[in-house]
Length: 295
Image 1 (cartoon, rainbow, N blue to C red):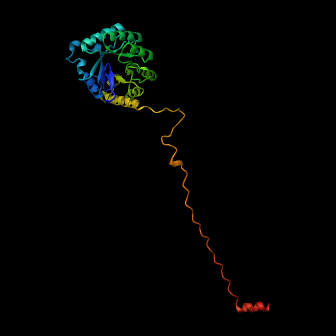
Image 2: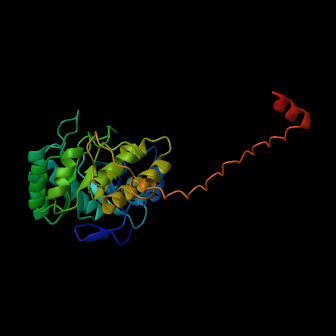
Image 3: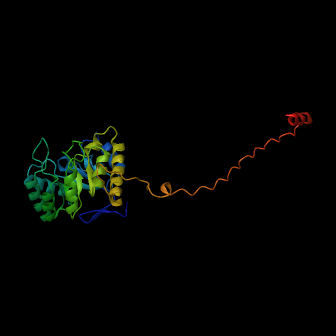
């Protein structure tokens, strides 16, 4: 799909599947899953990066070469903490991209809309390419775009819930108004969820838990890659008209040869009536004639 690039902050990518690096059984499994996914962007929590151990087995060392690193501010509870983490991450990783997360509620990990917008404004002013994780709120997404964010990243369901695209209607509304890429982030549980998000017009999806906790993370990563591509192709192809629930339309036309009048049948030749011969009356014998004469 090289002819359909995914552009974020002026950088062009081919894959539309972003992959998270948390919850994997090991860094090596994470690396293999990222390679299998074909992803060109991976996100890593800045709290998990130890700048003093870079090159010595830190998680960043297992990110495959050529894959862009997207540090995230996971765990930040307000704008101040998110900005501090982003700045530390830029020093530690050299990346100006940041996935902005402000999640003060430990139960739902729902993004704080007010603090997210405040942090986004400050980070954009500080030269970051900001990809904000947010609720599936069309108004908030518009405000984040106006603040200069490179994408908006509305949730599909609660983080790590694997519940699928619960916010489909809102995602469609966000896609319809967006002037920046829309990346559905969080809650996608199976490949068909990714396909559904792409089919309704999302530009990309970010998946972590569904891949990391799968029985076979590498295969699941491959499945998500295929589903993301299929969903995008389906969106580009354009869905046909959706008919009412009580109506049907035949796939094959009901006009044509099936209802053409039949050709007139060839005339049936008349069946000749058999001629029954009239039996001849034998001539009267001589004795019989004499008897008539005497009578």
